[in-house]
Length: 95
Image (cartoon, rainbow, N blue to C red; front, side, top):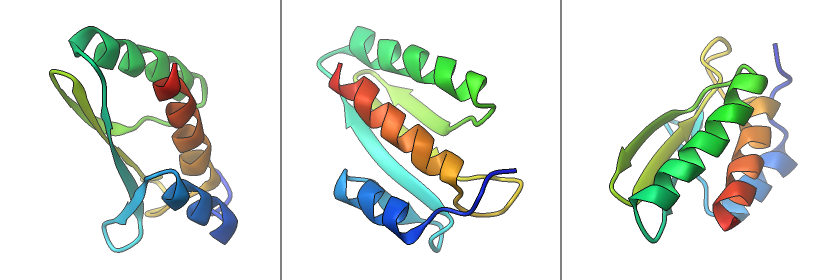
């Protein structure tokens, strides 16, 4: 089980473009890429970290857009794992 998200982690995620969703129990962000291959590559790289950390996003892909929602389902809210995966996804999106 992961520790609850800190206010600092939450604020940092919001500064990077994540928004609070589901009454504050999730973080959401839309990533846009130049084409489908880049979007799918981002998802593949993200999936490797998600699997390694046993923390899997809810996401959808449409051509060059990837919509992501992060929440720790077994706690019913946001945890440090959500902040960690959000940071990693932001890094991966930059290339």
